[in-house]
Image: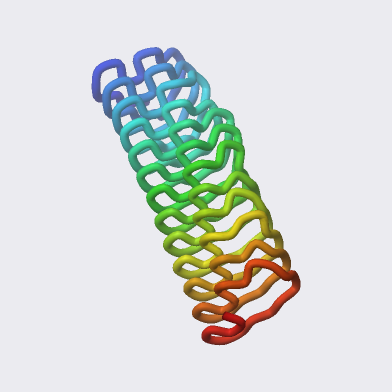
Length: 212
């Protein structure tokens, strides 16, 4: 009940069932893991027991030992080892993550640098690119791109919260809202809202160019 196409695809298989491997060494080390799909060079080739994983693209999930991960795109989730229930779609999406779990990442280089990040949502090119912590939502091109630390933030919009770092409990909705923010518990809704705010907590800015 397995399908293998390519040199060494499913080459170590013993009792595993319901796997599909297409490409050189795809699922190459798998022995007993089941219900996996690996398409591309060296996809899902590091472990012998992971289950219910999908990897499509060169080196996608190539180091994986965790279960129920989905990686689509060149080197998506490339470094993931024991992290589970991650979704990475796009070239380099969540590429450096090793042990973090429950992330949803869609976009080239989104959440690229985090190594042990969990429970983040990053959608858009470079969204959360450099972030290393948990529980953030960033939707939009370069949303929270520069931020490396800080959690429980929500930003939606092109370059929203792009250049600050270290903040917590902030909400930004609108292009470039809270773009330079480094403070906490701030809320900005609207184009350029609180764009240049770098310090000061517990601010609310609503409207085009509010608190610029």
